[in-house]
Image (cartoon, rainbow, N blue to C red):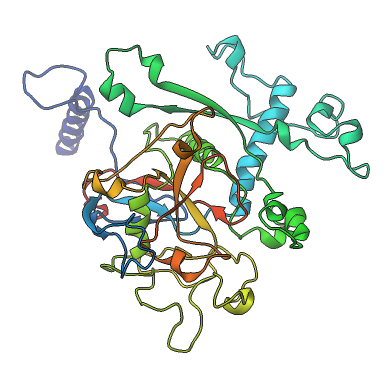
Length: 416
């Protein structure tokens, strides 16, 4: 019994000593001992892409003779990537969050004495919004008067505005003598998808049913969201990071969700296959049975031959070797990268990343952002992993969506 008591006393002593470590200097260089542990993360719906080397450029002869994708060897840091394009239902979670925040602000549901400034009070998300009982106070969030169609009570999408921030680390690195506020940028973006793109993108073509139904009808929940411009995709990424950090609960901030760089996208699309012209590796868009391997415009416009007249579900075709779906076809995808025809000649070979913070008043050529992967309306050339093209950052199209990435922290996922 006495030995048991002595053992317990020893354990108690060791526990006290361990608890005091990091709070009292010992004279030894041991580092800060009360640091939180880090065991890595496994974000839902994402797959791990390991660090590696990539031979970028055309996977075959440059048939277009544009010379904008010259071969070059680069290295890419590991990252997580969404296994599918962001779907309508996933983006709708963002839209619903903005709608709820507008309702809470209208009803003055704020936390008291939270230390925030008067113009930036924090919302109390524990408060309930009763859309029926509070209908009179929330009336301004809906279309009014002549803007109402057929007497329907519909939310005014023009009021769905989200403010996001970004920190210009490149500017801070090269102009570090300035005040920190010079590099903190805030932007307000209308975030509701441009459903009218289904009509506007085509002349003499009946696509009104897609405008009316594609984003909200449950039949399209698992289809990729479209009608979002580059800044809307950036706003979604910022919100997703905020949501992640709010609910992980461990107090350790991960890297931010963001758009992939052009070459992260290409590296992931190749699926670990060197110089693969398509995500499935082969030189052809059909398998041995003659079945088409992606959703695009085959032949001379037989759109449904591949199984989908417009878009298909975000996981509608077999994934590549990394487990990523529809890296070719379905919808083209925004990347972080600014488009310059000659960028391959001057970019770095370590995590190449070329950005351009284009303002509204800047020349239109400064607003070009790289899109990759091709879409349901494109010919096979745009499905190639090495094909580069662009769209303007303030443009919405019914054939462009996006997916997020998250930089991996550490050497390899096997380290955790």
